[in-house]
Length: 268
Ligand SMILES: [Zn+2]
Image (cartoon, rainbow, N blue to C red; front, side):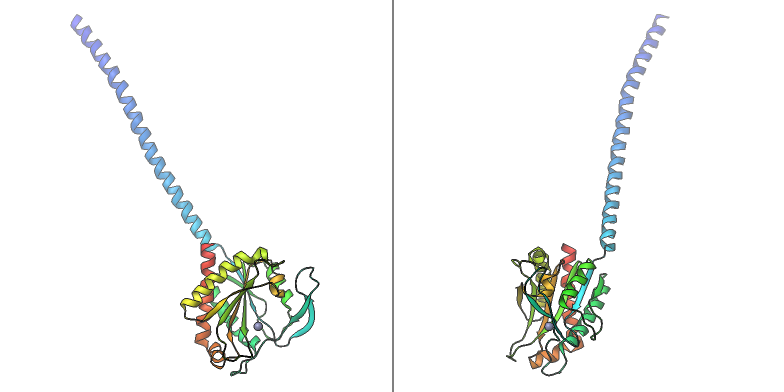
């Protein structure tokens, strides 16, 4: 009887020890399981967040305003070169003319701009144009305020150069001046985008003479959004004039400009 009692006590004690030990083990197991599950959930959440972010980035549309320089008839009436400025300049000129093609600049600019629009749209950008025909009358001030009102993320102005010296060739990129009274706030973004456009044009084999800051252009001074003006080349040079009207050459150049714009918005 005594042995039986002792055995019973021993079994109870062992039982308590076993339960006492096993419960924390169980709890530990449960806890670690929930920690692991928790980590999995966290990792899953993070992945989902990343994917959401990625798809949002993909879905986020940037608006590019393309301004094909000039128009069929210049308008020599004047307008303020900047907000509150005492200086006036012609509203818009008709630009230069090809020495070989005899093509007016405004026609070439619109041709190239339409190619650029097509490429940018295929890259997923929203695109608006200040003009889609030549017979318009839109001043440089009006072109700038058009892009402001549209809340464009970037303005690309397409032009071609002319010079009395027919040997001069190469593209030039103009941007709003860093120290300009009106242009300082849009300098940095314009400069970054211009740099990327230039490097893409360099890689594609185009001669780019440089990036030049300007504080005297009405179209820059009224702009509240970053802007890059590409002078594609010299229409006063016989060869370059012909090349710029070559569809393949035109597409290749607009492709490199679009690639630069795309990279700007990818790394922004
Ligand atoms: Zn021009």
